[in-house]
Amino acid sequence: MLFSRSPLSIALALCAGNGFVSAQPRRPVATTVVMAHPTAEPPAGWDLTRSNDVLARIQQAATGDPRSGALDISSALLAGVEPHVAAAGLDTLSVLARPESADAILRFLDHRRVSLRRRALIAAARLHTPAMLRAIDARLGDSDSEVRAEAARALADVADVTSVRALWAAFEHDANSGLGAEGSALLQASALAIGTRGSEADLDRLLTFLRRVPFGALTPAYAAALRRTDLPNPLKVRVVQAIAGIATPQARELLTHFADEHRGRPTPVIDAARSAISRIQ
Image (cartoon, rainbow, N blue to C red; front, top):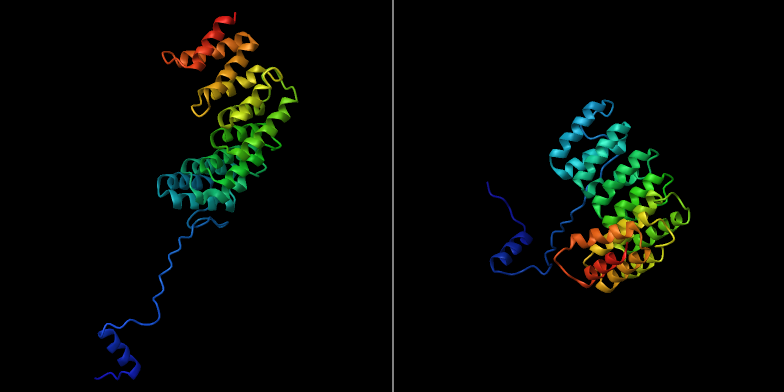
């Protein structure tokens, strides 16, 4: 059986055979990668009314493909699970550290349960995204003191310039409250974050609080600053001299520990520390 061909199809075939190129340029194939997001529906096969089953599936998801595991766990959390199941899910999302879990983590950062907000903070810090940083910053104003301190501890690892400004607000709020001989947990954590992430100007500013807040609250911050390799020696010498000016057993202990850590490696900072130690009785 013969198939008839139209004049147009014959012309196109002849053009192709003679090496002619169509006047219409070929459009490139668009390849867009779209990140999947969790839904508020339970993952297929998950019975959220059976806590033990959900816990088993969370454990199984943690050992499989990280992307699909994060999606399934996040969908389960968004759909609604028992608090102890949500805690296990957030802990697993923290380990997976996948961007697909962002929606669930953000939701639990505002959860009414303090323990779940704290777990969500730890998971948020593992993602290192601008959205998560801003969400952690917001928790510095949480109604619970432990959540505020957890936020400051998280920012010690992931803070940027904007976060340091938020840390200063939290630090100064508690610096003026006169809480205890060692200060509040937030005062200690925010000071440590500033000492770990702050600029040279931030460290000079922190020195102005040396006699205004409990020394024990600032000790970890100054120790962290002295260990940093990105800060100039003149600044660290100023830190050593300011600590030496306190001339207390705690100040001597801090400087002695720092000098012992760098034994055999003389630097202007180490020399200043050893000189200060010899003067403190």
